Image (cartoon, rainbow, N blue to C red; front, side):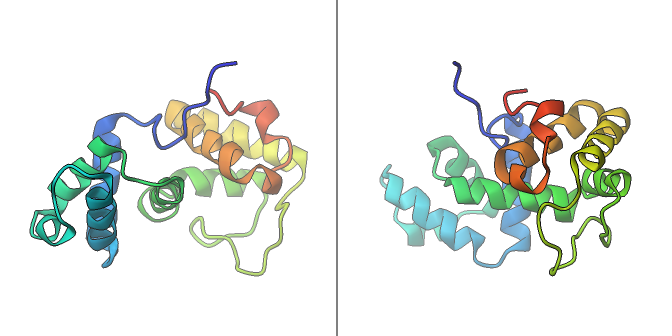
Length: 160
């Protein structure tokens, strides 16, 4: 069986670079965190030196060295699908019949958020409205949050 590429790593490099630069712009501590991760990977740069670099350069270096953790990748995908491009999540939640506010679920909502029929309706709506970009969003849910969306892996396999 082939190894399943993480949803983050399956994005084109330009898209990953853009997403990392967005995180560096929006999250105050991201540059310091990425600089520490790059320094820990080796390559001769101290974190203090990296902090003097432009954010875009730090982001490119973090990607080049593979300095992002699985948790970083998850947080970047959450930034993408909740904050930057919520249209996929809005389409999905609306069609699935799940309460939300511009794609953000209520804090007190417990998983699973809908039944298999709601999941199927949501997935079909996302695929119809958003094509391959929507498929990537759904694959992200399958990989990171399948327990909340029963049956989604039958509609969109993780290795898509």
